[in-house]
Amino acid sequence: DIQMTQSPSSLPASLGDRVTITCRASQDIGNYLRWFQQKPGKSPRLMIYGATNLAAGVPSRFSGSRSGSDYSLTISSLESEDMADYYCLQSKESPNTFGAGTKLELK
Amino acid sequence: AVQLVESGGGLVQPKESLKISCAASGFTFSNAAMYWVRQAPGKGLEWVARIRTKPNNYATYYADSVKGRFTISRDDSKSMVYLQMDNLKTEDTAMYYCTADSGGYWGQGVMVTVSS
Image 1 (cartoon, each protein chain N blue to C red):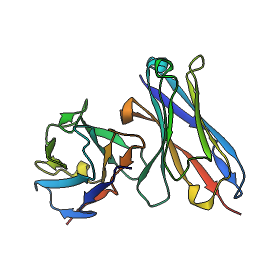
Image 2: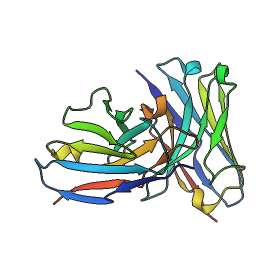
Image 3: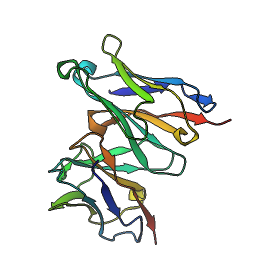
């Protein structure tokens, strides 16, 4: 199975900061990479698909990128509503696999 | 609007069985691969199972942790997807989410608790 190594597990940041979360794939997954946001007590929300494409309704401060087997989610200027858990998911092969998650919190 | 509504969760004892359901609406269900994803209390997301569409022979895929114990199925005539869970273990305790469009749409989740 493909392993997704996500880092960091916790990310303290201040409002207005530029933050980046990364996932590394253990095998080639092409651009079959999605990013999800999850707030406490809520269902996950798709943010990025195809590694770099913004899902409908997602603010433009969010972006996705790829460098080889490393995939990144960047928030250009952190807002309070962005405080949440974030997960990557590879959908290249079944079973699909999530990263372990990143908790984004206020410093 | 797209809606996914899970039902059938509850408290069961280890080694027992439970079947949870997901009712879909607002999109062409028969054209959509469907998934189950779970989240144990305080833990991360875990992909559980996937079922493809009729042209893809309703092929199914499972996480290693549930293979041989869980069965995903669908009824396109009712726009329903199911997860039959047999030989349940305490580590199966989680919120179970139904998703479509590779995570583009999510239900609100249904809680399954396995405890003696």
